[in-house]
Amino acid sequence: MKKPLTDEDLQVRASIDSRVAFAMGAFALAGGLVALLDRIGVPERIVAVLGPIMVLAGLSLIGTLLHAVRVSRFYAAGRAVPAPYGGLAMAAAMIGLFLPFLPPAPSDVPLNGLIAGFAIGFALAALLTGPLLRKTGAFSLPDLVASRFAGAGVRYGMVAVVCAACAAVAIAGLESATHAISLTIGATRPAAAALAAIVLILMIAPGGMSGVVWAATGAAGIFVAALALPLASIVLSAEPLPLPAFGDSAQWKAASGLIAQWHEPPSSNAGGTLLALAAGLGLATLAPLISPAVCVPDAAAARRAGVSALMWSFAAAMILLASMAVAAIAANEWITGERPDRLPLFAYAASAAGLMTICGKYVSSAQAALAACEQLTGFAGLVLRVQDYEPSGLWLVLGMPELRGYGVAFTGLTGAGLIAIGMVLAAAGFHGFGSALGHDIFYRVRESAALTSRRLAMTRMLTIGAITAGAILASQVKIDPRALIGFAIVISAAAVTPLIALALWPRAKASDAIIALLAGLLTAGAIIALGGARPVISTLALASVIAPVTGLLAGVATSFLHSASIASEGNNFLHGVLHGQSDVLNADKGA
Image (cartoon, rainbow, N blue to C red):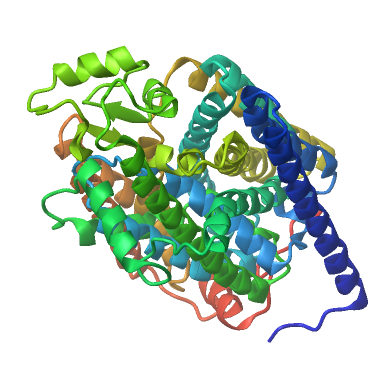
């Protein structure tokens, strides 16, 4: 049953709503001013960078203003985030995880299985794992598992696994943000990585989870608004949107046919079901994805936040699909049937940036495009066919406003939305990494009597060190974020999923949890090793499905080797989760 709100709760909620309304109004005003500058003739280069700079400054300001000196505010945003905003923050993380998988996807990835896996995993995280984490009162997944299974071995193992997953997600988000900054403001890769690192430090270090969750809320709103504005203009002009159920189905069929020609799907979707199960099991316990659930007031609010997250994600998916479909149709009108050396300037700019191939190559000028097409086997005439060029999904999203003739102002705002999503994904990963070491290891194991200031200082120092190392790596090496996200999904499925499930088995003890952890990791490692030096996606999916099942069965089997007590910790924990109120575990010092 939902608890009635007190006068203090209502005042806090009103204060939060007013601040959110102010932020939305400020963004709308800033966006309008950028569009006005574009109309009055301000140089396009200046207009294009205003949106991204505005968003980066806003994210920095959010983190700086939310400076936290209490443990609960730093690790759990004071447990005061209303459910709708917690769901919006979770949706931002989900969007950030999915965006790198826009076409072109690897040739051996069944698209239907990938989409189904993300949908299943996000639903499990939003409706099951997130509310479970909040109901226990833990600050993190390692905190939850280590509190259920007392013992240093379980804690060290969980921290290692969660740190690895968080680090992979953090670097993936940082790579996405760095790439988006380079594309939108024209910065070099080292400069873009350094700028992203500075903003991340300002987002996370002062306020911790408070900065992360409110920045994620803002990022999701910016992303949805930036993509929805051009679509709203289309709707207001009485044009139907190319969507299968909510718009013009004929245009949707034409757009999806174009995208299929540019990015031909695998000939067989036989591994689609396996991939869906694998992604679902990994995403359901991916720490950066479910971390906003710890910030809401109670377990009931966590469930409402999960529903809100699913609704926001569905809305974002529809807007994303519509944007790509509109851009595909517009790109076909602009490019198909034109000479390679007479394309619009934005086509050569997109190709030079690595967002579109023309006759199989990335070119930067009309002459280079013509030369590439003349060398192309099977190029039958002087004009381009649909199969002679291949725009990426990222360009279809980022370039849609320009393809429709809305100017660089809307393109800059779309780029700002992509930057914001990448930044908050990185922030969630880096905060999870720093918290696992600073709270779950430093405080819980070594310095359990440490003052709050020392605990937070240690976590901040670890987080800043991780961000600096990640920025140095991103400035020197171009990283595939899909590989890192895939690694995080595999390791979460193999090690975290069986331990979360085993925590609900009343007979299980710490020794059983260690066996489950080792069995899951060893099984995943063996399957991947047998797959060769570079395992294909089906091998990783197989490891993500078999490893958690093996780990859970091993833990359950060994639990029968010792006697069970009615008054055991497992029974008490399970009773609290099923029948108790929020905060089943003992409250943390300073919480």
